[in-house]
Image (tube, rainbow, N blue to C red; front, top):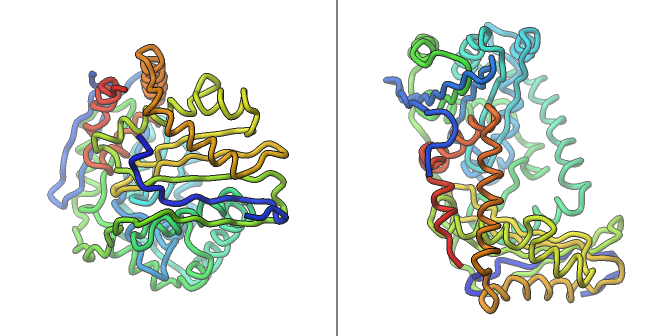
Length: 414
């Protein structure tokens, strides 16, 4: 399967001295406001809670060169308040009412969410409608939060060798597509982002016609939609900037990079292949392939490389394709002490290429598909994961994709 695809790159983290079926979850209902805001509601009365999310169709993919990380930094600034609600009032009020709130930025989207007792769900509507239109930015807050994000980058990316390698790997795999830039941004870009840059980004992408509301939990859908229309219906749509996303040109030949870090005791190898995004048909087979190769202690990589040959402390395969545009399938392993990193690299390729010579039989394949299905269904026991599944599916092409996932996984054959 992987043998026919172009290897995007092979990267090594080396010692400094080492030389070269059915609807799942509650039934959802979709509404739209005249201003373009899409609303997806799913009642679930299993617990007296409501998950309220606002998704914006903007992420690292939409950033221009020299402004990497601006979507994530703006996510931080969205908690700094409006003229009506001061800095941190939103989060403080949510906590006082027994809830939690947070946000995240991905390559394709940015989302804000609250988990609240159902009787307090109206707080989400009040605050989210306000900051969709009326964000207030102050220079001192931008400077302070920019420093927070830069420290976050140091701790999570630069000070962790495997994460630093992944950034290098991604930047090598993509020559022109914005997926080559990290979500958190490059340090030099972060240093240069000012208040005016953030406000321009906010005004370009934060409007009802570029947003989706997802709510799951203990509420009456008709009543909640009326409340949403009342709070959000008067907000005006805004013109979108023209997309500047460059298509990634076909790769010609293998790319290799090596990162040497003195604090690394054991070498680490990472290989990646360009693959199609979800929900293209091949994406489901790639999900099954990743589980077949590294889904637990009965997986092929674990049994061969970790347990039997003891070449690696860990080995993994991952289909990282839940994005709008083509991304990567990853193979990686951490070598045991004394293992030659190039031998470990070859062992990873052997296991991937063996699929054409020794494909899984029906028992092995069904076991893998059962594992994927069980994990997916069990995840939907959580109201939060129900909302996440709806939101992510909507960002990738439509929320109804969630009901096709298991059916498509079941159809995968050897």
